[in-house]
Image (cartoon, rainbow, N blue to C red):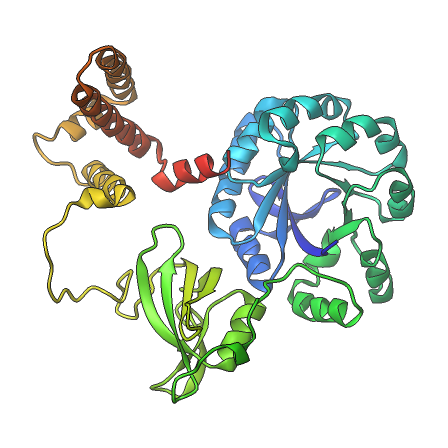
Length: 427
């Protein structure tokens, strides 16, 4: 079982506090704290919502959504779960998993319902007493993907009951005990203030794990540097694409050290031919490229990197380095459906910011949400009517009208196509 190092943020009144029992402020900006954990190399991040009251809870959900959007690691949501709707809100905010508190009877009763609705792989349960999991073992084994132990002293007892993977909360522990816990077969990782307080030591801790034969979560390469066919200068060209849109962002070169550093850190490193030196993309600008995949071509002499580009790729400030048009033949933009959606949506969003006299889009924004919803209902009805007619062109026109009004609603509510496609991909 590969071991994970999991950071933890406790949200209270829109700040990050020290832990579940200590509400002293650790960081006034939870997003900044989340980014610092992410950059340090945590594998996952748990966010506990400790808020009281609906207004504070909604503010916490907004913060969780912002964090999910801005960090590379997976986020796990916890706290303030009383019903199915609370689980849904956390998952819709971008959390990959949620934790049910099994010390609360209501959460145990929720398990089957939320597991069947969202999938077993998205549901974990936390508890501090071994009796809790013993009393609910059949439910846990059938409807949970893992356990979160709030008490590290019950690891072996839990292992005697179930073989489910356990993430262990530890707030303070000696290094030798730390390694001893990770060596346990049923332990999949460690979280709590032991990780938070030593977050900058994660690379060293991971190296120590490997030296002790403990398998950890890491980015691994199927090919060694020796497998590649290098140019006369000993370098391999790298074509870089946005992993979502497949837009080509740039071309750069790697030497052996850049390749090793890229695999080790999960961020794109290159060798600059002009400066004759190594460089980490984004080190000075903050425009990092987080690796999604690396693929070699048939001759093993070129690498295709699909990345999550933070900010822009080009030093000129352009999104892509490829913007100097040389020649072009007319072609249908519909060849790239996603681009069409993005371009139309961009126009709609621009109308909202920069109103244009006589614009139907601005008419809808001016009239407000009720008018937009009324038009959506009318267009949906038109689709139903068109679908009963034999001419397929009619339904094509009506669906186009409907999608336009959907995009107006998206712009009004601050939802992007990325939000929609991410949600669809996760279903």
